[in-house]
Image (cartoon, rainbow over all chains, first blue to last red; front, top):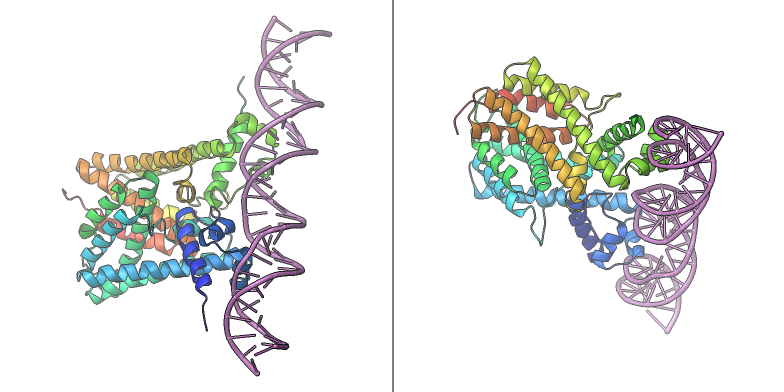
Length: 191
Length: 191
DNA sequence: AATTGATTAGACCGATCAGTCTAATATAAT
DNA sequence: ATTATATTAGACTGATCGGTCTAATCAATT
């Protein structure tokens, strides 16, 4: 029946490569070489070429990160501590060899937000899902709806920026400092 | 004597274009067309080509942003309010037509941190100078040295992430939410 | 005026890009 | 077995990339 193993392999490779070097930094040949597949197959599964593959890769990356955030919240009840733990994990996983985190959606979002609407939209959807997960967890823990939403945005922004700083400085320090600050910052006030 | 007006124009155009579309998203011809200058002039002033121009453009962008942050701190004494004001200004200037802020250093940093050391290093220097300015202002306002440093990192990360979110969602909302949160977050504690 | 170096000018180069095309081959359905 | 469809295969294309090169021209000095 369905053995689109090739398609899945392409999406996974694209997800990983785009995460590390962005959209313009990775060529279709880079991806094909990684999966050892001819160009005909790529255009068979993705008739719209690089853009279509990128959109699916972004969805895939979004799902990976979403499940990974979920995991932190499931293992640690308190959402503040869960976020803190999650950032610390991120710091150590940034340069992981098997499944490097890279800048999950950030590089592509930064590159293409103004020039490729389908990609921008896919990145926006990813950010919104992540933010919504944070917000939901804070709301469930008793934070007001407004505060839960705002904290979601704040956490997401801080993490994205922290990743960028850590990658650029080649050091975990920025993310670890941010993790340390988290409990002082996410207080359960009302406004 | 010295009339490298051409060189300055190249740096300014490169700074603006790289800010908007990143390193790989802008070709040398894009820059030359913008300044209306032949390729020979570019390679006369920048023998090492695109990379060298990019490094100088990053320095230029760094200086612009640095002066602009300074301005906020000079106009508003309280550093917390200065940061808040500065983020709100940023929100409105993001898509400015004459001097668009774009993602000042972020896109290039995200793209090239792992593949081009001179560019990565220039981006790191920019981030560090901005962070140091924030930290200095907080320290001068009576925050402990450690807290001032950590707040500098935190503010910088949050702003970078906030820009990315606002650009991707094509909305000022993320940055404005972050600005609203700032006064609750930057308390003058000791640790 | 002559000389010299700085700058402008843009044609040109090889490499690489995303994407196209045709044919071969594998797989499934009848 | 035959047909039809899905998939593989990779040579090829036109465009564009960063970068090179040589010649023309401008500006300053003598």
